[in-house]
Image (cartoon, rainbow, N blue to C red):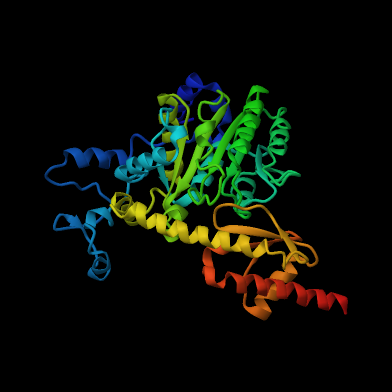
Length: 435
């Protein structure tokens, strides 16, 4: 094993042996090179005042070389803020600004040990880093039965972990904390569980209420007290889009310092929060550990980044930083929030009128981009294809009964027509079945 990796492992094991035991085999072997091109280039940047022949970029007149046809569309930005490589951990000013934003929006994180957010190539990359660092073949990754399909690829296919499902809702149509608790406690023989909490949930648009949040935290704590090392990952992709009296913060705050056997990892990003899907700017933040452990986890994370994408895109990091610093940022974001809230409320108003009750019921939703219908009389995939072929309407079929509808991309004025069309599609299929 590389001495740098061993040094990081020794630090983590000394500070918190439970976190060390959470690491995958890859997680134990990975490190960020201290001696190599990056470190030598960094040293030269400080000291090479005459000629710096270390940089893997081209310079012209003291600035990054660039094409006018590109710079003309980016003239508001200095070439050094868009063309140079960003550091593997991300643009330092952006990391600091995101930390400020995160603490403002999550008061439960204030005053707690918190690593500096590390920039990822959006949230999927952050989850992939977690999978690489903490998931080995056979490890349990606990997610609800209604989940984002990429978890299976990221943790199951890529890393060979075992996906363990529990029902998202209980009989009261609230978050099934008891199901989560049982799924965690079932891992006692393994002594380890990776729990992914995604609120607002994709595909249902559900965020638990404050009391449900306490039950989730209690279930994870009970697992830790039973001797299970829990990697608690909060996938906060749709953070901030809370339209009702649900949790208004990430559960990362309550999970921080919960128990020595619990490692809280927050995954978030500008993707949905600032409506910049194509920018691919996300963050991974470790919380609730000693400074030495946080530093060691950061180095291992940088090792994964260096070994995969080297560093994230610089221009989009600059754009996001510019937005966060802009005086108009909060007002413009609130404006978009109200539009999204209006669409969610309109959907609920339409569905609560009762005119569609014979065709479906809907799963509770109060946040995010989506909602899900539970079809009563027709197959979801059959309906999806029928809607697409006959009416030019796109939806997502999930299993036999569930149809996901993204109200995020439908103007409020068009929502009634959308659901009337889906209803007509159901009636079409019912007629065919009756013949």
